[in-house]
Length: 60
Image 1 (cartoon, rainbow, N blue to C red):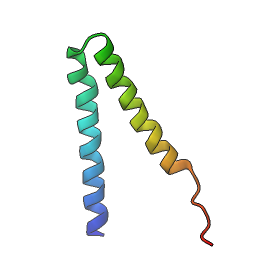
Image 2: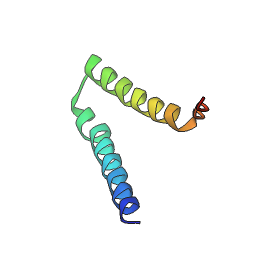
Image 3: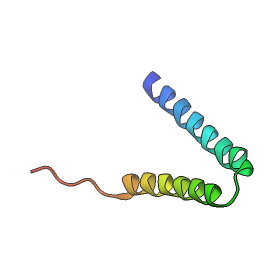
Image 4: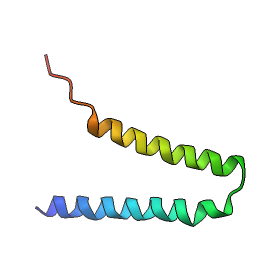
């Protein structure tokens, strides 16, 4: 049970860091840097969804 609590705290921390990056740090960027940062954030989200939604392959 303790491992689960630590995992939840870490997920919340990562979400806070990503939100801070998206809302605060990207506000200072302009042009191509902002676009590249937004695309990187989208790639991170798509990778996460792909990992969660892809069914595991059966073992042989």
